[in-house]
Image (cartoon, rainbow, N blue to C red; front, top):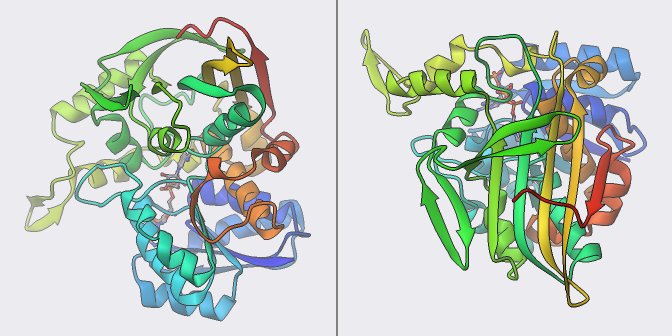
Length: 401
Ligand code: NDP
């Protein structure tokens, strides 16, 4: 029985709050805090109605302000903090956790606001401080990063002596009926997918132009979709933790219509993170764009179809080459019926709750900063299906890659 503090009342925060409240035996008291407290109150009202959890509360907090965070953490007294606000706040929240003696868990690596740069260096630099404080920081416990890293850990533990080729494949086969919308925070999402592509081969990182490399891949229950090589943060920790990997790539599906919108947004300068002066006020074009795009948390209504995310792996077992595919499909409609939001928020929120459960029940332990593939994947994957994300695996099939 533990108190947990969730920060960030967006689509993912909604799912995490629902999922924690479904396990009162672990999460006995839950506080949801965010910049806009009315968003927390809306979520908590729905969660209390649907789960009957008796100890839910809300608070306003600016997660970029360490003294404010420290005061809130001290007044509530959680054992663990789940950070599902934005990656910009990773370091201030880690600082506040260190100051108050609270374990930390997030779903996305730190990004400075003025540079779209995805790397773990800033958070890995906290290793000694978390170790000395006897605290645990769990990095990247959403779906990707998160479950994809844990799928890789399962492959390494149970299916391979050596992993040689890793391809993470992420397909959203859903349709929300809007001309253009992103499935999670538009600012973070557009920063991620408009950057140059990057993959790892024979000890080196190889850079590509954005969306330069694509391949038609088939996804279970969805069919063929054009998939584009992009950089994704879990590649950095996976090649470090599995040094036998010769090549690691990440593929994401985009429709033609989506890419056309994205090209226009970039060509007219709306994806820029450089501040401009507009009528005497400084604004960041991408932040303004976020304000006019649909809120990802509101996409669930009428969202049909499924996501399919998994790992396609080739390597050696008992002296022979083998292939392995492990994946989950998630229905947007089922996610919406359960939590009032769509599948991308759902596939991120469920693993964040489960990771928190692993820490609070002692299944995952340690002192310092850890990526999720460093923990035992078995207890996590044992519970993933019953918490809404059923997974499947196949051996010795054509991986198409
Ligand atoms: P949203 O934009 O819907 O929600 C973010 C929330 O954080 C908002 O409620 C926002 O408040 C709040 N927030 C922003 N800044 C602050 C601040 N300074 N202090 C307090 N609260 C703040 O995002 P999502 O729910 O879609 O995504 C949440 C996180 O999940 C992101 O970090 C994203 O990168 C990550 N993610 C990870 C995935 C994975 O698989 N690993 C996949 C998808 C997302 P306000 O409403 O007031 O602006």
